[in-house]
Length: 151
Ligand code: ZN
Image 1 (cartoon, rainbow, N blue to C red):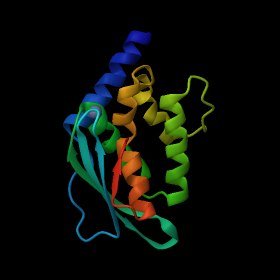
Image 2 (image 1 turned 60 degrees about the horizontal axis):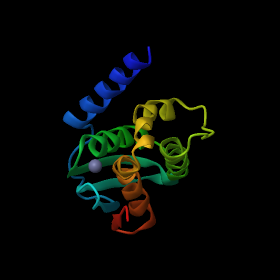
Image 3 (image 1 turned 30 degrees about the vertical axis):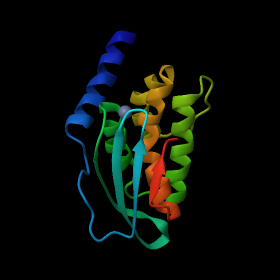
Image 4 (image 1 turned 180 degrees about the horizontal axis):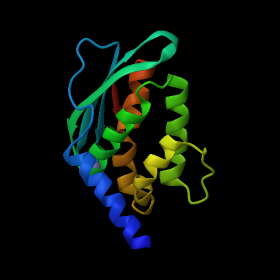
């Protein structure tokens, strides 16, 4: 059973890394940031348009990196699209707990459930940076910083 689940998770990660959703450049855009993870070499850009009431109306990303970083960015882009920045920040807090804490208390949330596929990185601290890179870049973009590294 656990092995089936693991395989399923791997399939989701591979699918998103091979066929990333919302991949490309958004030009013009209201916010953008570059993210770099020197430990792995992952590099990506997040572009978004913030609409009324701080809703993330459009989001695209591009870049290159390992399967985890690309799959995580792809999932992130799908999940935060249409959310407010406050909702996106809350999701990131919970996602960060999910991949770093054994006893994380998480929101009951369908979007968060989709991110559970990445929970396995918890066992590999270096991989946590791959999984959170796009989220850090999203936060930098929203905060008006154009560059972020995981260091
Ligand atoms: Zn990586």
